[in-house]
Length: 544
Image (cartoon, rainbow, N blue to C red; front, side):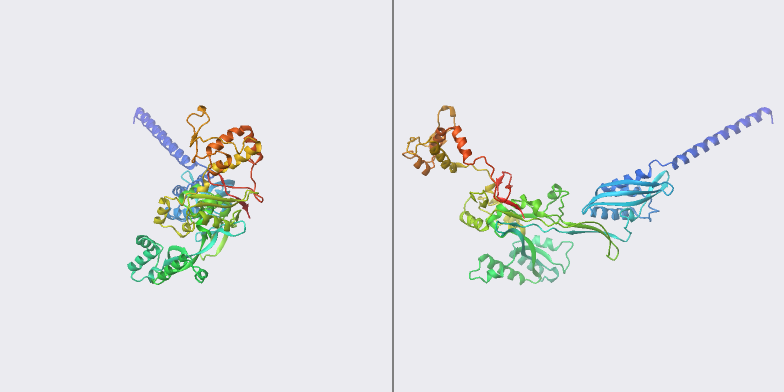
């Protein structure tokens, strides 16, 4: 072999060796690069916990090592975590890392979260594995709660707060706990089902398709009791009276006919009751089951899908005081249902009673006097300003909202030209002719009015002069002589307009101030409260 060929072969060997070294270096670099984690365990843990509040369970699953975590599937992981976290309504989760053991790849941390039962704080540990340059969580059930095992369940128990009563000045109930009849059927005991449903629909004033829909619900079994309608409980004492009222007799007859249908069952249930019914419907108001809109509007205030909420009157005005706060506990129970650990618990707080200045007897009496009129009426204690009765007529029975109002009845109420749902005492009214005696008294006291002076017959329309433009004072009656006595009898707007001009602005204002105008009225035993958008005073005397 020539010297030249040896030199060329040596150069090829060196080039090959250099390429090999370069390739080895590149491979070594990538091996090293893959072994260097791009995110620290602390950041991984915080990101994982942030996904919980956002209900991002699939993203959480991607951050765990499924194999080391018991080969848990994504479906089982999502099902387990969502059931617990959403069941306790987790929100505002915060994580504070207290220590990190690099050798063991273990983080100690504190967790704080808001739940349906209140704030929960606990200490926990999380272990990691470094896999292809990424830290992944080693997941097990104790990552949710330290005491939680794979066979355990997390249970939420709620104790409903008792809604407070609304009572009158003498302690008589205007709104509170009552008893009604729940009318329903046990499907498996129905005979001739179609005929039975038709009979039920007629007696309960329901549509057959509505009854069929209730019976077809997924939870219904042959031995289930399916409630169809809530009705007034028949008062046996009223039936025993010398002259029982027709409504009680009719309800008794209806319920007896219902019980003749095989499968029908009538049982007592506790409901919100309004003893005065129509006589105080606008004043007391009513409650209804919360809607999705209510839950959204009152988020974080302790309402659940089973709650009721005041919709009008005192029920709405004092909703916060009346509703109270439900008690709630979150516990871990084992596979046998035994209580293992109480995670958090809040005590039930029943609603407060509201005592009004209203007198029930006077309220009923005032209603009976005007129930056929379109009017609003008020009775007050002239010394304290307390409202003793407050009535709007015509009215409606607020108990119908508790028992379940049919769409036909609701439409009838809203389409009635007399507007029984319209609350007339919440509106702003001009004092009108009630102010005329006050003008007369001021005029006589100041000497501005001579009661025997004849102001002259101006007809039915008058204005002082052309400076009033197109405005004229009008009245309903022409009479003679136009003196104070006759002006009061005929409620003459023109006479009292002239009298007010004679009195003058300064004397009118000072006299009204002396009579108590512009003073803040205070009842004898409480701070006044307001009702409605128009801020009509309702005479509530506060809380018991």
